[in-house]
Length: 328
Image 1 (cartoon, rainbow, N blue to C red):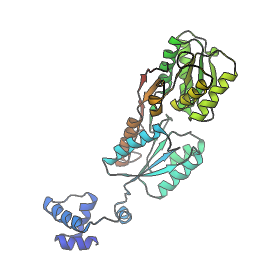
Image 2 (image 1 turned 180 degrees about the vertical axis):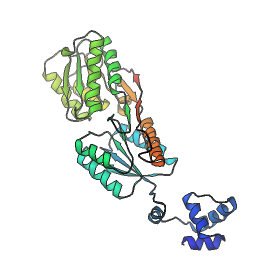
Image 3 (image 1 turned 90 degrees about the vertical axis):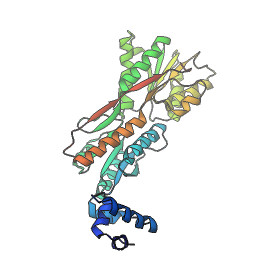
Image 4 (image 1 turned 180 degrees about the horizontal axis):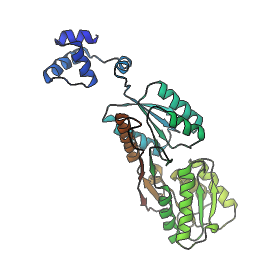
């Protein structure tokens, strides 16, 4: 069926049917008649044609570094929840951590007439910065705080600072497994939080035993813990930049026939589901991932409605919650 066919059977004008599908002003009686015909024939409007008429695609791009992540899946759920209020659809772009792919996706999504983009957990490069600044559609960044761009991010430094203070109250010889410092939030801010905790508790930061991983998953936590053991240093507590790193480190500790937490206490950040079912349960920091997605979606909707240039740049920092469990 065409719009003309629906209009003829409903006894209304084609313009009335067009307003019905595009959310325009229409009397209740006409709405009922059009709805009855639409439901009778299971009519679905052609989205491409509708986009050409309205200039709106009803689609949002979401660019992610990976999909096998508990935190990112929660953020995605929050985005979907936030966009559902306005019936937006998501188009997913997976980069596997390659910044140049982010640039390619931004350009592709712009050419595809998407209405906005949410960019997750990125590393800012001059090329990416230039691409975002030149992009004609609004972009919101999650997980990082970059000056001059709309962002929703976490209080990474204070979250790790408070977790480190908890560990320092219980243990003397603390080690730290850090994430790659190419990630400003997880790699740099969280390490700064550990150092800040040492200073605030009158501990010498130079006594901190630390290793920096080349990744964020359990495999990297496992190899990093083995590297710590190879240093032949006395360790009775381990702080990890993420829960996944902590879970990998726990495996290496067990292989050494050491007890958690009797011999070595351990903690991470993220409130990973696996950390809640391991034995002992992992002490962690809950970050509000789903709220991050909802907030980013709401911010993007407002930017779309008000125009990229007419919306002030907002940067929203979310809170956290320390969750002390058996591992410490």
